[in-house]
Length: 314
Length: 132
Ligand SMILES: Nc1nc2c(ncn2[C@@H]2O[C@H](COP(=O)(O)OP(=O)(O)OP(=O)(O)O)[C@@H](O)[C@H]2O)c(=O)[nH]1
Ligand SMILES: [Mg+2]
View 1 (cartoon, rainbow over the protein chains, first blue to last red):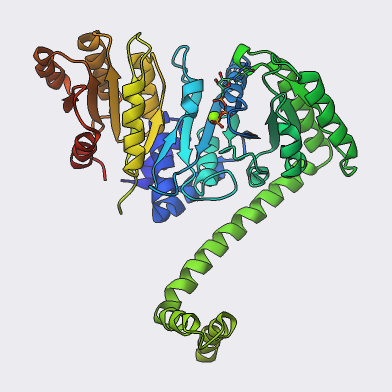
View 2 (cartoon, rainbow over the protein chains, first blue to last red):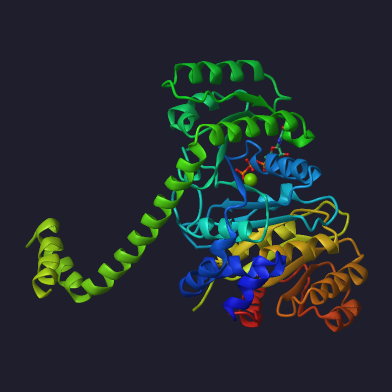
């Protein structure tokens, strides 16, 4: 496959090229480096909205509803939805698309599912590069749905400009979520399924928790939606807009871009270096393993000895 | 480099039984493949769009409604029109023996009746997937 040709197709905004390019970043590290080199100068135009929350709260339904709303404003919209890989078989069922079909074929909407492939943190290793590709293809809004473990999927903060934390009424769910540290990652709190009993109580509880949170320059708000009926979406989009304006006005957007860039390059460095180290350690590692398992050496000493050998050589 | 096989499992036609589709989706997952499941009542256009956007290797269509001789060839034609020539198309469901040749003629690689077991479908998929 010719990577340059593929990159040109992505930049021209062709869906087929974009789709194939995302497959490259999922599977082929060499191709990924080349591809990113070509497309990166064309990124930076997209506004990325992360959507997180426990399983079944309505993330996909909400994403699709938001996508259609932004489409009605004439924006090109990309969707990236991550689902978990089975740790036992390596396979995955990616079901988010079930909530995202219906309606006419829309050339201005691109939807892609990714499997997490053992990556922790609510996304997949390829997610960041996939976002860059969708961005380079000219999509102005990108909606990023996390796996939805119910834990704080902190990683979404590194890739999204605005993070929506989605909750539902009842079940004491909100308190659990808040304990799991979700309060800190949300820029907007969405109480979806607002057609159910107990919405007021849930909203109140989240408001209370937000009031008790450490004082920061921006106080998130709580928005009610019924995603399955497209209700509350306009208010939600206004709230996303309010957060975006805050980011711009306070220079936080620049800081955020720097933070994202730093995290990204560190990530790549760590991955490259650790692959190099493990590769080079090769047989030393096998010997160390034996020594540690038989209690001849402790793991710290064994690691130290491997490193010492290398540095003396140099 | 071997990569994970990606399969679109989809249900076309108007009936509302997706038990068979779900069984095959799970079987593919358990065989280590990544399965995009679209749910019920997809149109041929939607199936093509999903296959294109997801860049799948295989489109597995489940159909019970009897409209297969119109809908299935339409899916294949839409895929080929978009240049998705290397996508393996499989059909499962209640298909009368007499209708199978014309589906294969249209570009379906194999048709699996309700009696087929999932091991057979998975082995066939592995052997016939064209992109590696
Ligand atoms: N009553 C009600 N049901 C809703 C609403 N939004 C979504 N649902 C339903 O909730 C169920 C789960 O919705 P999804 O959008 O798949 O939820 P999700 O959070 O993406 O789920 P996972 O990706 O599996 O974690 C579906 O049956 C939806 O139809 C809503 O506002 N009200
Ligand atoms: Mg979902």
